[in-house]
Image (cartoon, rainbow, N blue to C red; front, side, top):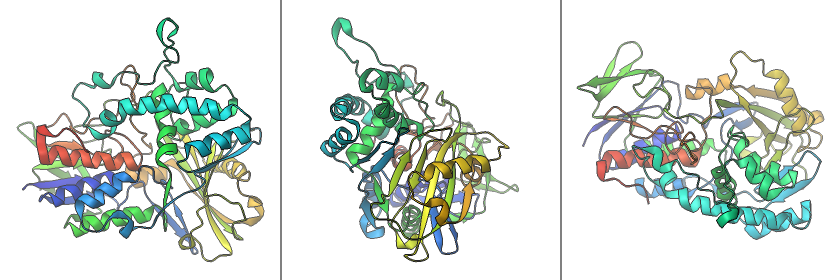
Length: 469
């Protein structure tokens, strides 16, 4: 078997490394920072601990498959995994609140009717029927198969027309979906929030972004005991069990080429490492593939996260996740309040994270923005201001430090011109493959894990590989 160099120790890169190692390859991971996990980070202080990246897992089947394929212990024996119920509480600009149950279509429709008025649930349910059609059309080509050499095959809008025949009205953007089908501004805000969480503005995002709420509400939201960093720990340990080697503090500056093929990497300081294949799991501009060839028209987005250390325990009726929608000049924020003793000093304290999606803008003073984020979070956490002991702000520059880029990639979406597709797993240079959120099928924990499976399949099976099952 071959020698494989993996650039970066993010979740997608490690997923590829573990699969390649179990296939018999000698795999070495070079990570420029001092730890693994990439965006799946952790901040600790005074007995408090916070996830600084994703706070919940969707499509856990991706990591179940990884653990089944790479060892004897299944995922649930390596991490504590539990469904979050309700999946989310939404607080709208007018003060209306609705708790959406986890992976229950009937429960979701009933909750919307109760909170927003009769008929709201039916409209959302009709929308989910069309979203499922888009999901069925795109699930395999966008998530389970390598991106084709000619992406025109995916450059089609999969979201069904609202009306058939002569009255057919193609729906091009997510904003049109909300305007034509949902009408209630709170339902529209609910729909938009799923795309805007990735920095996809509803006015620009293709109608196929409807698959985002469909995926979450169908397959559920899951929490890993001890925080999402525990998932990164488990994947790292699985890699080590499969004898994957890790070299930390080793920055890759470029890929070595010979006769037009990748044959290794060049490290910072001038050292080189030979390899039969190179897997890039990080957005390193100096590599031959450069930045993704296709980037979504919404432009670069990142995240600001505010870690809040609070005195006092969670009140009765508190929920794990609350989305507080924009109001009064304050941004839309996601407030995570996991009831997890591993994240707090004791039962008389609470760890809370508040996250907002922002445009990347070097040199920005994020403290005033963090002030508005905390003000918005007070609508989700009663008495927050009086309970606050201290806060820690994680900016886009902190994201850059952890991942190599301030931008946070979103999942691939199909549309009429292919502009929302990331770079394919097969780079233009033979022997160089792309894994992780910056490549097909895009960002997010589940998508990153899928990219690792696709790259491993391409290397192990070659041109015959047709995708994961």
